[in-house]
Image (cartoon, rainbow, N blue to C red; front, side, top):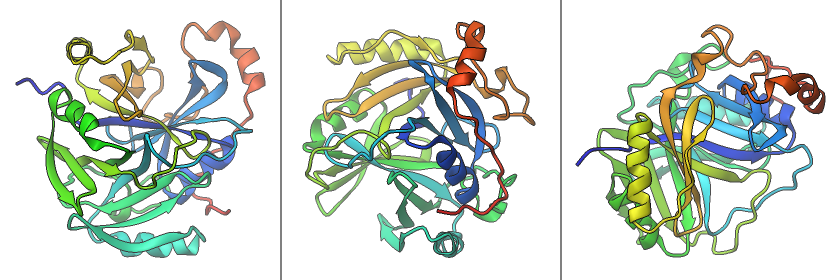
Length: 319
């Protein structure tokens, strides 16, 4: 069977203050701001893309920062934790770093034989740093984190569901995932062939309250596919499976289709092509506000609506 899905493409979340969002991910976590653009569906709001050096698929965490957004609440029908892969042996460094920055964290935990640290960002979004076992990717060392400790990309995602089986069916029958392990009868781990670093954990009702999506919430989880042809094949598979799927949407740096899986989490399938270097050089990624062609005539008006932000990778993050 053709493997149309090769892992996680990106994760998109909601933030509040745009400058605080940029400061946390560039200064505290050492990620690169690889693209500064607008929310195509709400042009008065930024869309930030954070990742490693060139924003390769599987490394990109993106945000819609709504300045006045209230805090969300993790709960059912939501992706509750985004996990990053860090080099094996680097968790002591990260534990000390988070403590020095006064970021409350769990200390070093163990799960499925992996060590990890759990904490939240400035808006309460659930994050994990997982010591990678089989991840040969390189992190970006152009910021404040030395390469031996730098984030490599995603390690996985945790979805909180009332019933894991309908979602598991989508993962296994449409998206090329297979069940790897089960922990305590409540956490089901799914992996994809050839990509051990990016797993999907389905957790049974933890917490069992209803989620409220706002600042600190994940908006959607995007899976990666090679190109538009494969994307159309997935679109048909999803339709044949009985799921309502959107038309293909042009997001400038990739093409996207969206659908809501049975547990309520919004999924996207995004193409690897064309990537973030189509309108900026490697050296200048993330330094200018980039607009889609349809928005360029309104550049002055849009810039007036957006709060200016500054990026300085080497200033220590402060609460």
